[in-house]
Amino acid sequence: MDKYDDKDWFRSSRWTPEIAEAFEAKLARARAWNRAQYVRIQAVHLVGQADEPSRAAGRALFQRVISDYGDERMQALSATEQLGMAFSDAGDLHAAEAYLRQTLHLIAESPTGRSGTTGMTEVLLAEILVVKDTAADAQGAQVLLDAVEPEIASMGMFRNVALRYLVARARVAHQLDDVRAAVYASEALAVAAETEPSIPRHPDLGRPVVSPDLLREMQRLAGIGEVQPPKVSWLRRVVKSARA
Image 1 (cartoon, rainbow, N blue to C red):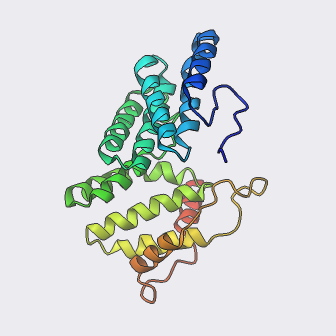
Image 2 (cartoon, rainbow, N blue to C red):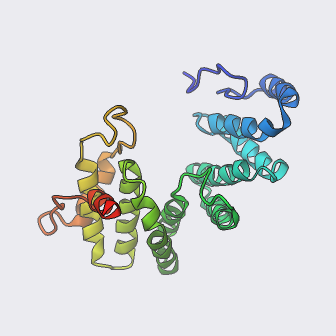
């Protein structure tokens, strides 16, 4: 079953020579200022498919946004981050790291900052550095996570973001033999355990999905029986602090 229903010509879940030809024909007739967005949206749909040929086509379209529509800053910025994520999903950590570092460079140069990105590029990059599992990379990841903490704190309604951040912090601290690994892991467990919707009208918005393997990993790092999950999670504390 296809992930998308193909209701729009730039949201196809399949990519054949015929579909690609039709896409190019319609793209050529589209308004010039909309073309980069159409190419990027089509790329998003393709990299989300189960088959590698579709995902590879999606990555190529992201690269096209970057190379052909560089003047469309927000679209190019978004495509660069999404391409890094796509390479990470494909297991090409070298390419993923390069594109995520380029994303941070573009954010620093952009007059609109993080607009057009996930807002958590540093976390995405830190996750890759953790997998590389060297002391230097762990230290680099720690610097990234320290820098992005205020941004993550401002995204309080998205518990999935807070959880991903805390998991990365726990893993980095563990690699650095930092005793705070247990604290971060227990706070990750506390965020994962919260059931109250952040936005009642949209109960699934920002809801974290925790796999059994991740739950066991955080329990191990937390040292169940030694460090108990806090009654008030990191997420609630930073939101309260931001409002004060």
